[in-house]
Image (cartoon, rainbow, N blue to C red):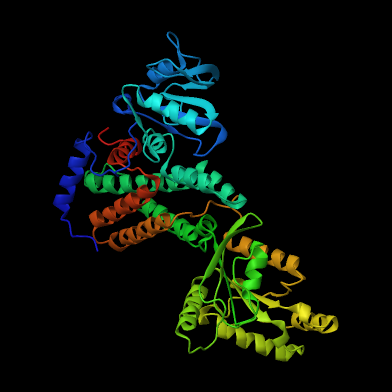
Amino acid sequence: MFPSVGRGMWRAAVHTLRTSRRAPAFRLLNTHDSTPAALADAETIFALSSGHGRCGVAVVRVSGPSSATALRCMAGLTHCLPPPRTALLRSITDPHGKEVLDRGLVIWFPAPHSFTGEDSVEFHIHGGSAVITAVLQGLGSVPGMRPAEAGEFTRRAFQAGKLGLTEVEGLGDLIHAETEAQRRQALRQMSGDLGRLYQDWSHRLKRCLAHVEAFIDFSEDELIEDGVLNQVDRSVSHLQAEMERHLKDERKGERLRSGVQVVIAGATNAGKSSLLNTLCQRPAAIVSPIAGTTRDIVETALDIGGFPVLLSDTAGLRDSSDLVEREGVRRARERVEQADLTLVVVDCALVATDAQQAAAFLQGHLRSVLPAQEQTDTDRCLLVLNKTDLLPEGERQKLDKELRQVSGLPPVCLISCHTDEGLQDFLTLLHSSVKTLCGDPLSGAPTLTQARHRAHLQQCLAALAQYKLYRDTDLALAAEGVRLALTSLGRITGRVGAEEILDIIFKDFCIGK
């Protein structure tokens, strides 16, 4: 609950806010500062930007006020710098001994038209470790230069206003993307789709706050038109509805970013480890006819049709007096509770060919494997009937036909990990399920990709609820609710300040005219 503030104290605070334009009342830590003075004070940094390891071409990046000096020293340019953003073939030399280190391309990016917004240089050199080491040592000997810290180029781009905070996170996700769907989602976020959504909400919240503060400060002098607070009420309601819809995304964006948790579960000797090995196409788990071979969780990462999957094989579920196996069963049940999708593997020889008997057996088996809250959610489970190669062809076809007539069960696949029979149909169904869990990263509104976004948006909604709570009893506290909502949203985008609120006040209201 917000602390109680007297109206006189609030009006004094508002007056201070409006008269102290050089000292904003609130500001987040990561505000943009791209003034020439701020950029001039920055140190010049350098680093290998193309990743470590032997390669054909390596890119060394330099950024900061001494970039031009580094270019002249390393590329033997005594007079004019090369034309901006134009590749120039030069001998790369040691700044002191003038020994030729390599021959490669140099590109000059004068501020502010560079990735960081500062003067920048790129050296495109051969990717051998000796060449890279020599060039980095040469740059380190130039006065005013130092090696960059992790992520420092991107931090400078953010501080210069070249990238928003959500775009920075999208760039990081793009660098670490391992599947096609991850690449698409990260590229969309880096292009600014998610940032523009949050910036639009932030702009609307700033208007709401400006209007409420203006009403508090000037309504008694009849300088504010009627209906201003009603407009704020409507805007706050619309924002709440949009944020709530945004949060009801079933964690699709977060799931796509981190990988879909798919767990293989079932009784002992059903063929769970064989299924894991078949899917990852290598002997990741030990397979034997001895029941209870798998004791611990065996994990592997897969790309299923462009979507990231973290596949886990678990211990067979049964009662056991063996302490180690009991711990394995406990871990298996815990992993099933955490799963996004569970593959319940069943030995098809145990399933009767009669439809009613088969349905009763499989439903009972599901109850023994799945948590109670997931037993009715057929979208989060696939039934995999394994070892079809051990059934006569006629019996297998009859079982398949009978199961198609059973309702109330999750999707069922009949496969043989020994002969790969039915595997393609199973992979198609698995891909469809994973795609449903992740969604299409290119369609619809941009989705949440970070847990911190979700936490800040929930705080934002709580603050807007405080506005509605105090709207008719204490307008000062209601305004504080909008302010806290704006601050929570600003923690996602990386910036919000009181100066912007003042600009809206004086733009929207002709106060004192």
